[in-house]
Image (tube, rainbow, N blue to C red; front, side):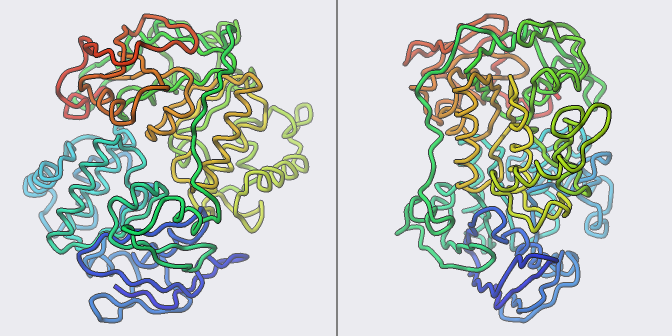
Length: 541
């Protein structure tokens, strides 16, 4: 595959400028660059979603012109987007066959083919599950399955490891190597430079919309790659100085929540969750997605009413307080899915800045919105958080995923919150933005901010957390010491395997601020740590 002189302009910005890339058949070719560098735009051009203003594309030596994704699919190109392209109110089967009904029909043959692909690649997807009932990780698996179902020979994967634990990343990379051995080609987009170096055969670096060079993974370090991307060293989330106080900020006592799954079975998605976060403390929750983390965030934010339990914020009972009042009382949230729960994609940036904070200064003056002040503060966030945009009147949909994330972080940190619920705060952002977000959390933590951190980036969890707990099937089943635990050990604990450097704890057992287990202990995981993955049919969603 050859891309020559690719240029794409939008009003007020040049997304791609004279880009040249050559991708060899049967290789994993990585594409890296900072947020807003033009990676996603380039891949949308290759997938037929957008047409270049200038330049040519050749596939297997033949020049092609794609007018839509159907043209790209016909040439064996499939894409898994960073933000999924799924219909929530359809089943997995319906999403997969949509637009490809002629391949295997829409009945038993299609169901059998989906199961065959799912089993072959260990995706664990049920064809009749409703997409709206799936977590982020399972939605990604559906997208990968959809591409393979269409017989793609070239796979474009945009941030495919963002929601995976280390063991799952290793399994994915093994699959990629198998695909490569069979002659398939993978274009791999990621901000995790260590992963890029471990899986890629070649790397192309894009900066400010143009190619700045190629790198050989065998002779390149993460530091060199980061400097090529953004001109700075690779940041580290490492935080070891303690700012934890004895003052409780958030107390969760015996929180329980049930939900009915697609088969009509009522399951416990939160089972006796108890913990306390103190001022100046970051409590990290580790767990494979789909084990109750999303429901925990919803319950704390007041978006879902629990069946039982008491929530206390800064000494006040908020168990029945509406979401807006919880925000006004000092609760902020970085949602795990910025498109579904964090942004109005077709609204301008300044309207997204006031989202969730319409009653707070500077967005309001008495009973009225202060549009002028809101616009001015949006300009400030754009400057301070380096949101790459031609202006605050453009829609949120026009920003890259990482710049959307920086806008959300800037919005939520602008109201001096008492408690920040950060669900995957650096997902999809480049190394420079990642360092900035980590610094913001550290600085606010030093000023007394309490943080509930949920992340699939285990280095981030270990580096930022003062206290670390493992969530499995809706329960807190173990504590980990961030000072001694490794990502591999934590990943094993998340999937229910044996736990080194972990201490078993019942969900209802409270631990003090900053306390950790004795390093090297190997406790059993308790009654819910079965050998089966919670996503295999009996998932708690």
